[in-house]
Length: 553
Image 1 (spheres, rainbow, N blue to C red):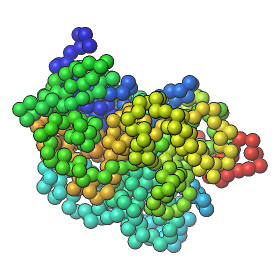
Image 2: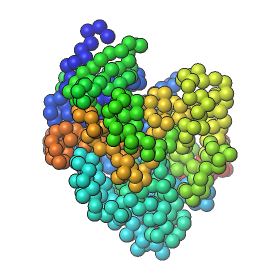
Image 3: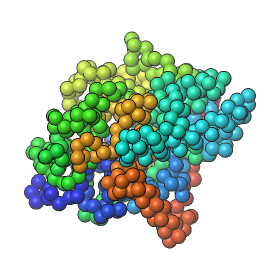
Image 4: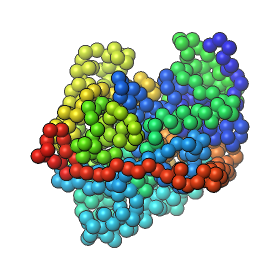
């Protein structure tokens, strides 16, 4: 810590997830702020960082991102935050494979073709499908107002979102039951629910609408992996006099005379005090006020914590492969493998780690040139199923923990092999992460990956606004926004915009600036250099040494 300056910054941000980094970048570019970002992990980026084992590399949280087609408003904001220069590769067409026991539905990468494919498969539901897509657009427009409301007083936010509030807060399952007669169509329409972690029986239609709507133009992946988002944004922050420091676990927020004035962090087992007139937490509302904020402060927020229901955590099986999965018919798209069409059935209480559905994808196919090839299998879990080892340390949790991990990994592989027999023959290396892994590296409440459940309470009663009850203390990240890369990105826009100017004016300034920068770059570089890379062609999948066996996907 010798010679480290601890009081030269205009703002401090706790946590280097994309929400925190985006906030820092925007404050730096729009207001010339020197921003300090503190990260507890050894790598920047939160769930956008990558890690390696042997020669294999995986992304921890970036699997695909919507609305990254060149020229979209979200892409303009992303390019502005990161300083541009990131190439976004298309996952191809189709980019989603919804695999059910009786049938697979492949989702095209643009809205007209999505509608056409659905109408072709479900011709009797054409009118209902056309109305559904109109309703999705209504929810996307509504969620924009909801986001802006995070920068406003509660009464103004409520007024702004009054129109279509009933549809937004409607239960997704109820909407689908009223809208569509065919149960398989309902299963297909809801198949992306793991992208925000709340099944149709519990989620609000607004969350379904904004997330599904985000992928109406396909899926994209950053060349170089999710880690490039943090690397590029860090360069922007540092160019404006800021800094991004790792291995700094914030112990508490300093509050003096009712104002946030800095933080105390642990580095190399020593306490270091960093001071700034503004403190922004990207650690989540529960951690911010349940752990970092001193007693007696944030009373309103502490009451909110008592009401909130945590969302899910995950088991993730990271796989290193022996050869290119394209040789066996796989492509860069997402494979959603469901054992049933009803997304709402409760898990078996006697077998809490039973796998009824999972995400299955090949990160290396989205990142041209990455070898050896890799894959991931992801299913939801809860930290209570791993509570026995809650007070143990990473890599030292004991043999019984390793045995449970091994059994969980086998269950995930068994589920994949229901659809792709002998997939195990492709595996060279495997490693499982659990909810305890998430808690260890992120300190997330209950090991959650999406914060609280995405129901109507998250929209209103339990919403986390940008501005807190503690003066000069602000929030950013998924709690302010919605789950996912774009949710975190736009939370940064809301938080930075709030600090720049009131009543949504700061947000508007950011959006207009991003558009101007985009137009200047397009003129200087030409659109051709910004186009996405061609995707891998789609085939039916077949497994090693099974030339006579083909699994239609």
